[in-house]
Length: 439
Ligand code: AMO
Image (cartoon, rainbow, N blue to C red; front, side, top):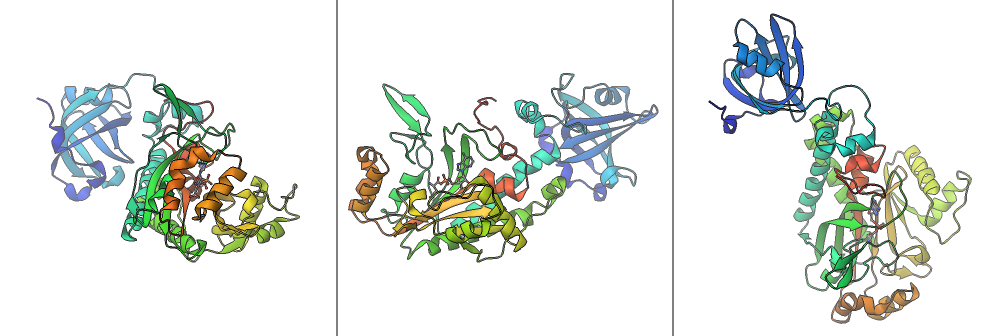
């Protein structure tokens, strides 16, 4: 007779209070300790385990063998009685009457799950299904999901509408060369670098506040610890703004909502990673681009010429300075126009653009946008792009486009930063980088 899996009780929900209850549990065989007259088997589900106790005189040979002889990491169902036990981890154990091996794992395993040996990151990603069985890895993806939930919830509460824009597009969304070209029937198309042009087009519709948890595809050739060729972001756009300050308000509160949600809902996961999340106070400090150059001068080997984007070295130096001032998160505002894209609103030589930094890592860029069609067209031309590629984007600007602005908050970047992960690949299940297209 098979064990009814629909009656399965979640291991994290079991405790000594269930003493005497008949339960069904299911999970992966993590560890077997056979002491002769008695054996202990740890069954893992998620980041929790339950101890199954096998006193050889009290359980049938068939039950004992099924757990002791089956390879580690096999999936089993166990039906038995919960008994309080001071010696068992969690204060309880399960005495089984029936065991069913649902799927036996091959041996040897492609990588260890609980062994304390360091497995290299490539082996881990090649075997992600097994890597995610490790509590500290599973915790990362639960926290990532919580970050998405916390952000999405807050945006919904603030009246944002979630949109979905196309990922297969006819012209490069961010301009430039970092686009993946794909065959589209008889034509070629591109994978979207961001939903930038679409979220802006929505500002002409009356949906005044939109967001998308978007995919960015970027054919950047560099292989760094903070770049992916496929990444995700909270992309927001807001209409009827006075200036970029209105957008900064949304961003700082979104970051606060994300970190607060993780802090409040991921206690176990943070403990598995031995991390604490710091919820920033708002408003976040604003540092102008000029101040950033000024403050980092002398702290870095290669000065940043005015007008250019901050170098990685300057970003980290600024991160250190801000950390000394006890600020993990901070805005960098008033960038030079020359360093920002055509759609960002110029303000003389400056731009109404900003970045959000966290300890030296850029986690967000955004800006008030140009909403005047003539200026926008002129800027597209000045960038060396072909305005005919932007016809669909430009059209709404001729038919009632309110002042607007927005930002893209890199999801992997904020997860990586929150959890102090050494590499962005740790924050995505199946990373895409220059040398990886599988699994
Ligand atoms: P930007 O190109 O700065 O701006 O991207 C916004 C944020 O997305 C994240 N990000 C990445 N993360 C990992 N790997 C990458 N290759 C990568 N590229 C970007 C970063 C970055 O800050 N359209 C604008 C946003 C806007 O103005 O609304 C844009 O895409 O965290």
